[in-house]
Structure formats: C-alpha cells, structure tokens
Length: 200
Image (cartoon, rainbow, N blue to C red):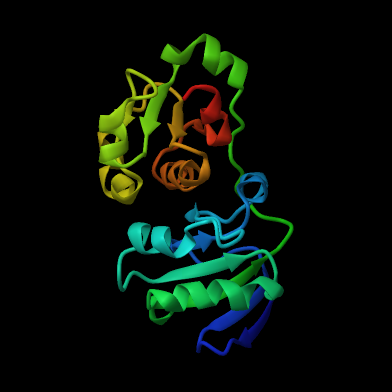
C-alpha cells in the first residue's frame, strides 16, 4: 500500500485492501462496482456525476464530525469529488482518501427479480423514500418506511426473519440504503435499484 499526502491535509492510500476495524468508509463508486467488491463497513453514496446528489446524501447520512474514509475509483476522480465534500465542510472529518485494491473482502447479494415479483411476501420490503413521498403513495403495501437519512439509527425497527429488499423512487438512494443495512445485519439484503421503475 502506497501512502501519500493529499492537498486537503489527509492521507491518500493507494490500492487498499483494508482500512482498519470499525472505520466508516464512504464508497463513491458506481453501485455495480461496489456490489462486486468493497471494504467492510462501507456505505455506497455514488458520485458518478453532477446528477447524483452526492454531497446532499453525504451530509444526510454521515453525522457532522463523524470520522470517515472516502473510497474512490481512481486518483483522477479525487479532485471533483473533494470539491463536493468541501462544499459541505466535511473534509475536516475525513480520516483519509482511498483507492481500492482489486481484492476486497465483501460483496453484495444479487436479487432474483422474477422470484421477488412472484413472491413479494417472502421478503421484508424497506421503503427509504422521504415521508412526503411515502404519504403520496406506497409502492408496496406492506413495506416498512424509514427515510434514508434515518436508516442508520432506526435499522433496529426492521424485522429480520426474511431477506430484506430496499427501494427508493429511482434507484440511487437504495444503493446507499442497502449498503447501510449490510453493515447492520448478517443476512440477505438486496437493492431493488432501478428495477423499482417496473413497479411504480
């Protein structure tokens, strides 16, 4: 592992395979790459472009002053993403910047969509849209509604007897939501992702 100093006063660690026990990691890569391989205790808040409201959700999910590492796909992505972190003043609580090794210990489960469509009652469905969105209409009648910004604190309200399926309105927030629950529970957790559009 190669360690350098980035201009924001944090360490830049290259080709990381581990980040220290219990360290919170915000992984900004696309959900497809994240699901294939990521570090333990990672939250997938995607920063693929300006359309992703990355800094909004970083500020909503990670507490002010809560220390975290930022994991990026490559060194070339750092400048643009750090500009967005600085916008909300979160660079002060960063423990470091990471680029990731190709050999990472965690991966996410893939949902068998046809089974979910045929047997939705076999799953606990978690709706992480905002309260106003849920009040405008539930997509799945028996879903449990917990807004994404409250999910880390309220995960204990979710029953764990069945596999969990996380959904939002378009697929962006559910990547973050599913990754949060992966850190909380040792069971099957699925991100419905953009397939939500087939139901709404």
